[in-house]
Image (cartoon, rainbow, N blue to C red; front, side, top):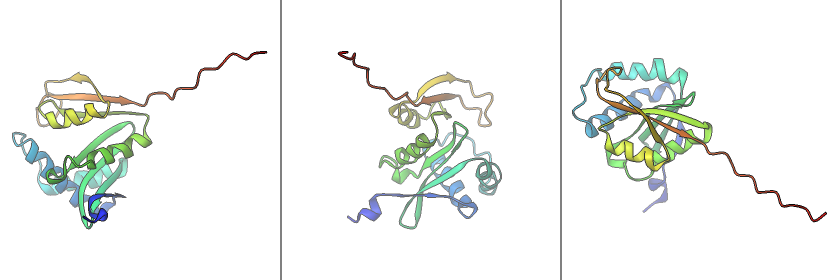
Length: 165
């Protein structure tokens, strides 16, 4: 198999990619969490990416060939969005995208739905800890969620050895 097809390229996304980012979010979310209410049209979701996320976040994509298969939007110690198309999950793409955010931030918080067992396991594998659970009253889906937190550990310095002097 060709390595170019197995190792995704991480690219900075622009306004031209916002329709694709919204489509990836919708495809990933609704396939994995079909019980969630579909509150926004595809056009409204694209506008959210263009108007809210693009000016306020770093947005990266994972591309295999010409296909965008994963996306992340992050900044100010938050991951706002992280989605990988269902057919490409479990291949390290989400970990690669998350790693990009971890390189730039020393501390990260994010919300995920309590019933999203796959996402919760993913974040826990990447050293995130659950800090708070809610009943969902404050999110538009009215779905109980959980706040996760990650903090870079300080680098250890070698112990000083006493001198013989």
